[in-house]
Image (tube, rainbow, N blue to C red; front, side, top):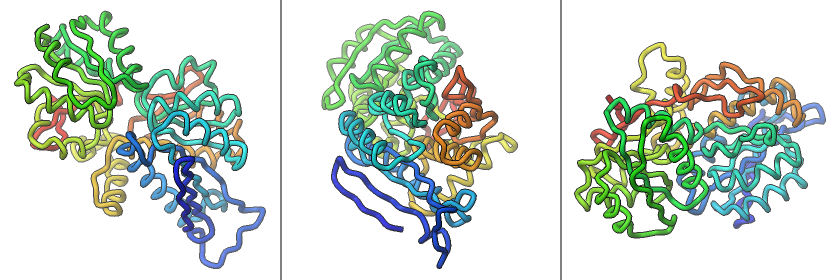
Length: 389
């Protein structure tokens, strides 16, 4: 394996080809490498997403090549660190589309960066499978024919959350959202879907991704006496929300997080303060808790075993995004080869694909392919994920 790491326009080239493809084998025109560009937030504010995603795509690519590649073609990854910056992400992808001629792009990690490059990929007619959540990444579908995503849409997460709240008799809530692409998209769905679900938003507070004190926002929320609080953010602010909730003795009001909280590293950082936090997550996070015969369980446990043995850390929803994206990409390359238009058609016609985040059924009207039934409600109990009752 050959690795070259440079700074932000930082492109991490990871060439996994003949070194893993077979000792002594010579790559000819008949088995030229199949390239995939992978755009991730390996560093910067989104690194907690990009790090497990990078590790997962590397692990899968090495396994593919150890098993003979894709129809005799070794798989070559070109991993781009966008440093969690939308502008740098956009410029890097434009450059790579021109220079590397890869037929497929995976990522970016975060919604803002995915939205920044979706138009670039669409114009170039290169299929892109985003790992981010915003529904806007793939809608309207008629303007995003080459754009797909594997993370559950924020609209599905909101619906799952609201359904659970209704079952608990909750109808008046307060929301906090971060002022970035992820937070703005989540807030839009919360506000849009609340009335149809019998939910009234009685407080609506926002904050910046670099804010270090949320006392003012949480104090305002407390004065409205909501039945529940929903926070929609990623990174340090979602940790800060929980700490403030505890410090202000607001923990009698249930706190819901978005699926951006879906890493046990967040729970570890918070310790006992995280107890009782609720959130909708994909089943990849709770493979051990699934009943026997659940369609995803076997694959989730296989991924969990391989990843945790290799990296000595727990799997997360974010690495699961990369698993789904890589497996869809490999499946398409096996089916149709490195033709971008044919890859697009192959992904769009995916049916019954069992992944980490659900059972995907793509179509010309749905470039995510998931439903709210692919999510489960989770509660933090004893510093672990537990199925909420």
